[in-house]
Length: 139
Image 1 (cartoon, rainbow, N blue to C red):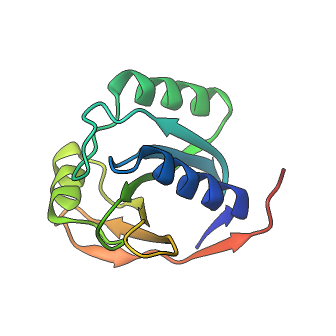
Image 2: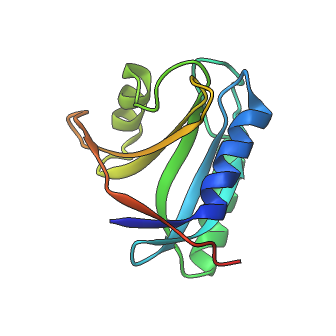
Image 3: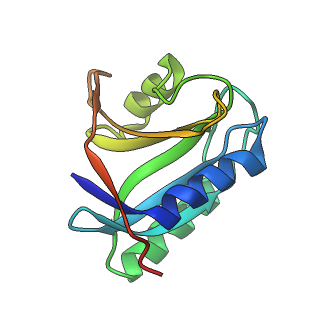
């Protein structure tokens, strides 16, 4: 199970709202199932239908999180007008990039109340719910 502080959930939603109508994206990092860092990453192909993490931003996050002794725990992005569930494109991109058996967080702005859900995508492209809990913010 992944534990995510409520301030990070709020920040993912805020990021999604700020980038609307385009999808936003970012990385969650931490240790032992506890998310302790959120990194916003520029969507290098701004679109309401897809995202591509800016490679330079992504490398900077990987370097910083490694220096801090944190593991990459999840990639997040928004769906501005569809449910908080990985699309065929999301799943295909996860498999093709090799980021499988990895957690993906979806933030949906489809309804009045934003929805945040966590998923795992395996090497076959199968999607499963990832259990998570929202905990009190650490800061």
